[in-house]
Amino acid sequence: MRNINKIIVHCSATPEGRDVSVDTIRKWHVEDNGWSDIGYHWIIPLSGSIEKGRPESISGAHAKGFNKNSVGVCYIGGVDENLEPKDTRTDGQKETLKCLLEDLKDRYPNAEIIGHRNVSSKACPSFDAKLEYKEL
Image (cartoon, rainbow, N blue to C red):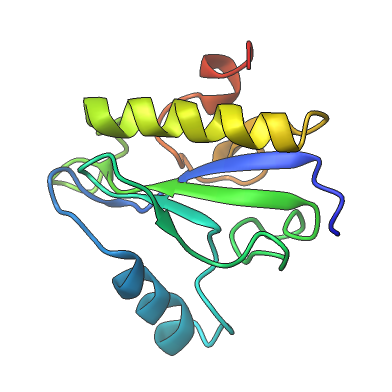
């Protein structure tokens, strides 16, 4: 059992309105990056459904230096048509993300919810997840 102390929220950095499947992201990560599997544990498409990525029992590949003790959650979107950071979450994605984070906090009560931006120089997830979910 891994000791989870961070739940890290990401965006896929794909343009607003462009849906991407877990299989596509897995292809990017495995074929393009040479990783063993998709880097995220959970993916939330535009519909607001939820798709399983890498098993939570296995360290992710989503936040360099923080993968061993974290769970990675990614919503599809995060940039505008010019690839500039933008909070593009649909209402369904917002609802699902909050529910998923509540569930993860129930399972990992000592974990801090943060955005990828809090552990890297990226704008990801294009909103302040640490602030938005501080009450969870």
